[in-house]
Length: 203
Image (cartoon, rainbow, N blue to C red; front, side, top):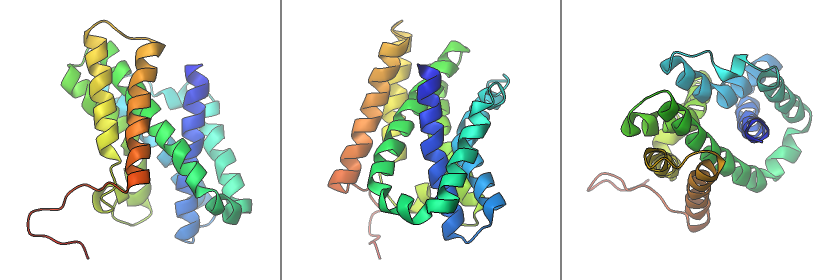
């Protein structure tokens, strides 16, 4: 079940990467690279930090799914753009899943709760940062002020706490993922934004 959920999250993140490629007028190779990096970058970074073989290299599905997402966007990007609200909901689900799974894996490998939570956030948002850097733009995470990393931080913190209390496995993972998902959806629906520095006004 976790593998299926992983692939769903990878597919949605890959769609966003391929769409950035379209907007930046990249060819199909550039689109595929952005799709792969968006979908797999955070998980690869996590596993390299943990000094284990990246999960992306343990199953062909992890590589094929982003390619499939690239093909869909290549031929039908106008239609994909029109269903962005639905894609954003799935992206929020992927965010919640990846932060929880990343934190749990880090705890399993012996990291402290604080470091495990940090690694969970990296798992969730690292791919998006790589996507934006490769596309030659400031990472969206840094300037759009949307509450994206904050739900991942809270979901990761809850996952680390549950694991510390010896509550882990899919129920704990689901609980932490749902928390991050719910917070992200609330931020989108209520247009919640992170505060600017004192005295600084938005343009």
